[in-house]
Picture 1: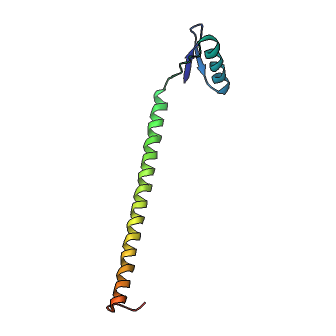
Picture 2: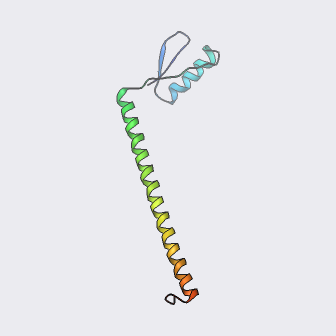
Amino acid sequence: MITYVDGQKDEINVSDDDDLLTAYDVARNELQGNLKLSVHFKPAAVKLALSLEEEKVAIEEKASTKKKVTKEKKVKESKKKAKKVDNVESGSGDKV
């Protein structure tokens, strides 16, 4: 939940774009242009956010590992091809 305190010292909830525009007007007209928004976390929301962040990190790690394995595979294939070319050029391998 997001809140701010207006000029009459009331705590006001900001739940949509219209509320945020109202907060902007209050800040401009009643609070000398200063607006302090407070974010209040609910325990379940924090737990969900942490869970989603952990899942995101796991997905990124998996993608990174997959890229690394693919890169290593390409390097090995390149080395094999280079070795075949060297063997052909030196006359010690199969002809391509």
